Amino acid sequence: ARHAGVDLDLVVRNTTPYLLPPGSSARNRCRHGLAGVALPINGSTELSFRFVEGGTDRTVELYAFVMSFFQGMSLDERVEPVKEVMMLPDPPERYWTSGRGVKVDVAGSGDDASLTFVSKLERRAAEASGVAGQRSLERVFTHAVKFARRGGFRATVGFLGSAGHLPELYFSGGRSDVVEANDDSAGEAQTS
Image (cartoon, rainbow, N blue to C red; front, side):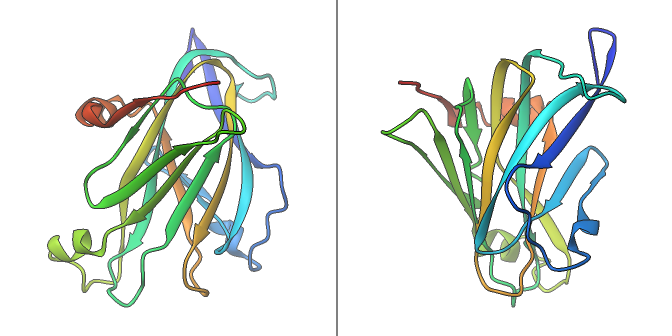
């Protein structure tokens, strides 16, 4: 990506222990503008998302940016969808949630200004698509957040579900088409 004539990189780092089975982190990748990070099941990891000047470690503050999140769902009926929990300690300016094949609950904390998204894909979405018997993965939009005047943000992410399943957090930047299509599900983040 470019901003004000400067090439940008998005650096994602774990800021708490990152405990995965050996070799699992090789699944962390970026393809076709969509990044995926493998995360442990029934645990949580704090991640730092930071925009830097390309090829450097210098943080670049952006006027505004949107980050969209997706949840992967196996289209194999034998694999039960997992529940994703994402807590943002510093709330975004605005957020949007999906209403298509996913249930997303959003809650703020009374103790601080944090915002938590809890999403679970509905099995009916895969079955209705007519491809539920295939052994492949569908990525479903769950929510998007907009931050202003920042160089990044932190999120604690966890997945709850059956053992033996290694979920991934999928995300991309600048998905204004998703945001505009779901504007009726927009919420203003409240700060105390």
